[in-house]
Length: 459
Image: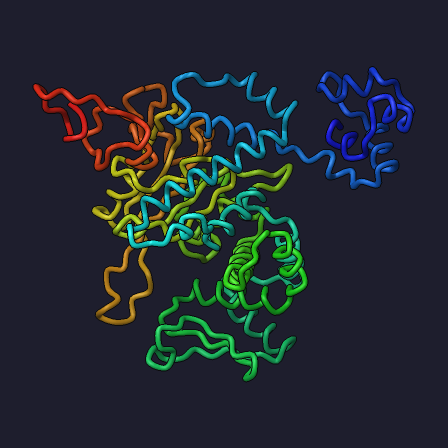
């Protein structure tokens, strides 16, 4: 209300006169001492030419989580604002909070690039934001849920009842009958490391023999989204804030992947199945004839208003610890910056291939999560491509763990249950960690020349 009034250069009395209420009522609304009634909502929409949905969008919960996380950074010292102060800042100075968070994100991005960059890099490289980061933030700002793509997938699936095991044939038929596009599976040597190629001029989708059945279905659904939903994809991309051609193309690919997942695993059937089997990923994968990784990715999107699943985050890392995929349905800072702590069993999963490894973890700021980790394999089609394992991690806040079967046998009241992890050794303030690999940037660890501690960084 305050921002709207200031944008129109009005006093409280002038806004009150325009809306037909008293200035004191406007004051109460601006200070969150009265709720916004439906008549007032309609009056604001009419007089100020606003979409009422813009006035009812609640970003406060995400801002609270972001601000609480930012203030846990050791750079701010030991004095932290409590929840009441944080809420007051968001209520009374939302633009200041937004600017502060933008500044903090820039600070974190610069730190991460300094850690990744060698001294030979030019200084301006530190200030660039990668397309991957912009795309990740775009998906995160939408809680990794796009209702328009969900509706499009449901509409297309609803045009004809098709059993899961018949999706591949159905997609081939639709591409041929509606778009005159043929689908051909080609030998590996002809595809030359390409898994899928859509030749528009030839009207043919070429699929590599390296793809298993599940991934062939997914790739055809991806192509279907690109062909049948170009306008919708354009509208979504326009709001992404991405400028580079490479970033725009990458965003289109990710949105088409989202559509493919929604098409292959329709929202309500998937949610009901996941809840019924307590998020047993193998059972969900079997029910929808999809891969373990496809289920993990899709579970992060179940954030429909009135039909929400467990809010998950999802990471995929290689054997060197590089994060190659990251999706997040809420404001989990573990998903934003995690993946580099050896105490987290996402790394130990490589020693137990194919085994689901549950773990309860706690971050230095006290946030607690339940996670599962398991390896998956990339397509193997030659001697050189063997043992191309990756590890997937799916996690949620501790408050949701009771809904997940993998957590059922654990005593969540036992403090010894929680692994003490950090986000990154450079940023982790934990002391006496036997796995420490770097001196933290903002914390001075104690050094005693007469004592040898767990690591050479403290004693």
